Length: 218
Ligand code: AMP
Image (cartoon, rainbow, N blue to C red; front, side):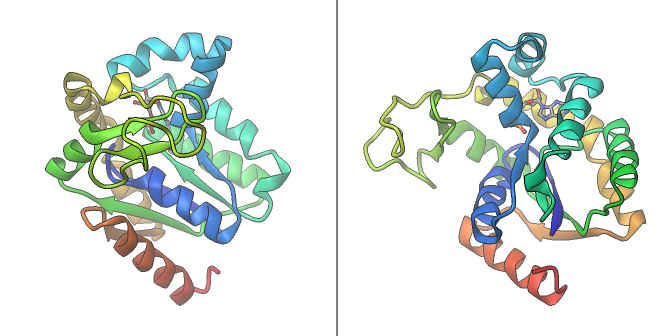
């Protein structure tokens, strides 16, 4: 099953992608996570990307597209993959189309997480992450077992720089300006289905699982 998860920051794409990746044993490809890892390691790509990410701006198309095109060449994507946070612009969507054509594969489904701004903002402002292993928590929705500490590796949790209030507003503005139009792009191709991103994690996962069974994708 080859999926694209589309929706604003805070829609829950990452949480669902991670759950679906475990459930169906296919890789979760998050460009945000790949970029953050590059920043942590001080890789040249990370050094270039950091300034854009901290401001909530998009990293240039060439950089992210190359990351994804390279990642899709890896063996573990043969049985499927979940793209989370890519594509985010028309140029990225068109580059992805031409790479998929070259690889002789097609996206089975684009899932749009229809999410209200108030829910997105609440999720992003309450999110806490582990700077060491990348684990994701939320003060209210996914609290760690011990307050402020990562369940998986025991590191103190932090708030992402781009989850702070001013940057969140910019990320939502950038989404409206650059990414929202991809809904129509994929609608026209007939590959888009919508779920409500405002629901709780379990409800979204149930809807998605049912959708994939109904469509015989799993
Ligand atoms: P995310 O974790 O998906 O919210 O991504 C965090 C940040 O990484 C974004 O605000 C962008 O700065 C950058 N980023 C992630 N994916 C992309 C993309 N497809 N195109 C451009 N920038 C991206």
